[in-house]
Image (tube, rainbow, N blue to C red; front, top):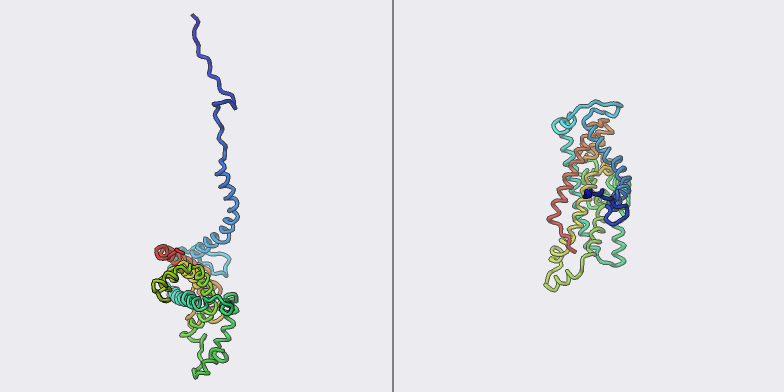
Length: 321
């Protein structure tokens, strides 16, 4: 009897039917992601170099005793933070925060309320109204430093234009920039002159995008123009209002040039906004450690307020068109 033996299994040749297919080392989707990342990498590198690294360095300096006049510094821990909140720096911190928020409130009201009113007044699409809108918008293109120099002349106590007109109606000259009661108001005058036209144009462009069918239906139901404004125009402009609120708040909190030129934070620190306080610590007192601590605090305040505003707006802003 011939013994039956198992013959060795034959491995199928490459390319034959049933042969295992080799998976590609990199799928097309993965390759596309890598290419996309390589295109974004230069932008990320610039952000890391000019944004994230300076912020990290700022936090580091806030825990040192660097006075700008010395090339070296020592690690002092939370000493600057304790000084800022409980030491002699606390009164200047709260004073500058109060002034900054008052200034921001004034600029926000001028941009939102003033811009809305002007947009309603100049909403007619005629040649004459277009020229008047352009005149109101031109100050936005003027540099703040130039505006401040012009208002130094307008608000001058002796030969200022504003005091001249006041004298015509029998009002005594006012020291607009030299007394605490009017210094911050004078800075706000300069700001309002620049932002009113900007708010008007933003609101006007949004109003043009509202469908006239809403107003036609409301008119058929007997709604007055005032009712149409509060029931149609104002709710549909809420995304624009949110945009102006956030951008105006951020820009107003960073005000510096007008204060520096008009009042230099005076009189008696009555116009010392937060950014000017940081400038005073860094470039007048040469205390970079205290300036860095105040700057980090300022960054945290802006971040918290902006995030809170955006979260609140998710439930209140109407994005219907």
